[in-house]
Length: 80
Image (cartoon, rainbow, N blue to C red; front, side, top):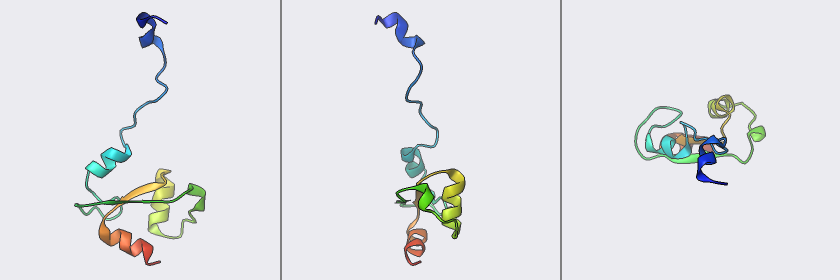
């Protein structure tokens, strides 16, 4: 294939505006909005979420297995 056809190929790996890196760089908790150091909370599969807590509801609504949390939100998540 020559270089002339390179631009005509579809983009097989589109970039998203809400990538994991950008979410961490924002330094804003996705639950309470607090700023500072964040930790990523994740689940293996979305179907594992029952939707009982606000955190689970938010992850289901956003269709994401990960969520950036501040220390306080992460602690309250793991206390349940």
